[in-house]
Image (cartoon, rainbow, N blue to C red; front, side, top):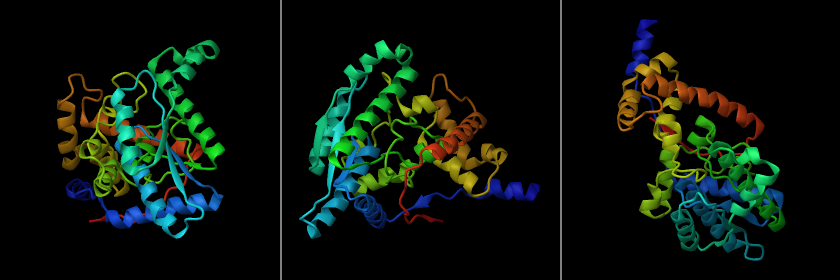
Length: 305
């Protein structure tokens, strides 16, 4: 038993590698297939200026451009919507517009603040604190996107990555999780950034700090207390047979987590044990959420060595 535990502690946790050209084609074929199966005209996407939504939009546009060369009589289209509120940094919109114009996709901006304010009369509890208000804004955005998609005969394309959606469930149920398909749901954040580079997205966007845009000054790191690379490493450790006790002692995890704890003035999770525990706790919740809403994801080719 001790020997097996020692071997697990010494064994390196393997992370996925990909051929971005191949995976981009696999994801693109998946998007096209999902749209055509419904007889629809394309997809709508909530474009935030972040790397996930930008990469998803770029993958869809690349796929549709290839398809449209051979089917000009009924082309497929990506339509982007920017849905800011008063808590969004102005750069969110400008970055999103920059991406839309770079990709040459149609876009529209809809200020959701009047809708948020309207809930003060019907559901005052929904805006009583930042947490509930943030989830409300996510559901408002989902409502707008699904209505636009319906009127345009398009699908709502999701922008959640593997770490967010299937690792720690970092999304709002019936909000940004309410989509028809999840093209990058099989890619950890690390590989989303790699795909963004391959697709030629701006360097500063590739490395943009992840944020949901639901609270003033909010970032995913502040909310979680660790970054998505830690989520990927822990989840892969579990998938490759490590136990909880082995994970908290694993040098590969400690080397990644300890510097992240040290850089925080008041760390949300002050030990490696606390970080790993929180990821596994969130993963249990993510599995419950996935049973309620689980949009299809593509089969993609990833290699582990």
